[in-house]
Length: 231
Image 1: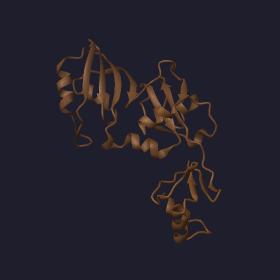
Image 2: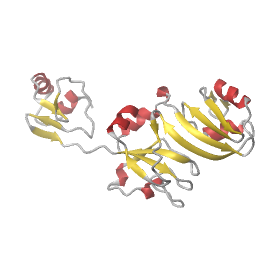
Image 3: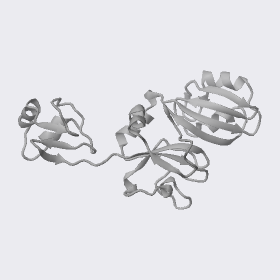
């Protein structure tokens, strides 16, 4: 919400009072004086007027988790263990996943309580690069790379995938860089060649790489630099 609207919604202020307080530098957001009426106030923001706390805010939380196989990217599931079962955190119900992974896909998973931050990461127009290590049942042939670079038509969605980069590492192993996240996209792309994906592991999202110190099932908080680089 815009700061002027946040202030004007308070019972003891009207719009003119809010604009006057901003112009006089009496409003502070997260400890900094703010005069811009368009400044965005979020649920995590601490807002003060004349030294009085109007909104205490709450800490934003950001985690990277090394998702193991056999684990559902969901808050709860009646049959399977979920990634939230791996978290030893208070108020887990406030957290959500930014960019899900399939049941048997491993690797980098982001978990946060900051909805705006996670939405920015998953906006289609942003085209955040995501890198996967892939192993397949049959050999990966050189012409796969040309097809992936041109884009594949997905009939169900009636769309063509964005160009993707395939780097062949071994006869049955490759690294694939995508700039979108369609349903079962990697498996469907290799399925175009009737080649089954036997292992899929997400190594990175944007500039953020999975911490090699994290064993499957372990997690840690993101650093401020990592949060800002992704956000």
